[in-house]
Length: 237
View (tube, rainbow, N blue to C red):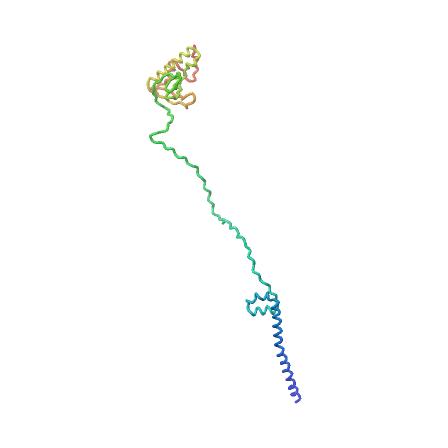
C-alpha cells in the first residue's frame, strides 16, 4: 500500500515539468525569429540578391550567418580577333607568268615586187662617153674604171696605167690607148658583168665580158694592161 501511494504522488511532478516546457517553447521561437531578423537587417545587402532563390536556401544561409558577397557583373574586355594566317598547303605554286617579247610584224612584200638584191651576174648596155667634171652616170674614167648607171665599176682581172698619174710620156700614151679601147668595147653592144667581191670605196669589182671573152684579157693581150699582181716592169722605157 505504501508503494502505491508513492507512485501516485510522483505523477503530478511530471505534469508540472511538461507544462513548464510547453510554456517556454513560444519564447524560444520568438527569440530565434528576433535573432534572424537582426541578422537579416545587418546583412540586407547580401541577402537582397538571394530573394530570387528558394525560401529554404535563403533561410539556411541566414541561419548559418555566412556573409554574402555581392556578385558584380563581369567586365567586358574587347579582345582583338587573331589575324587569320593564310592556309599553307603542299600544292605546287604555279610560276608567275613571264611576259613574252613583242613579235615584230612581218613585212609583207607584194609578189610582183621583190626587194633589190645584188646579182652575181648582170647584162648591161648603154651609151658611154668619157667622164668629165659633171655627174658620172655612164662614162669611162680610165682603162680599168667606168661608171654604169651611177655605180663605179672596177675591172677586177687586169691592171692598167692611169692617164692622170702617168710618170712618163710612154705610160701616158698607153693609159690613153687603154682608156679608148675600153670605151669602144663597152659601146660595141651588150656585155656581162660578173661580181667577184663586195663593193668598197674603190668601187664594185667586176669581170666584164662579151660572148665569154673577158675585156681584161683582151687588153692584156693587146699590151694595154697586165694581170693583177704580175711582176711587170715600168711602163716607161
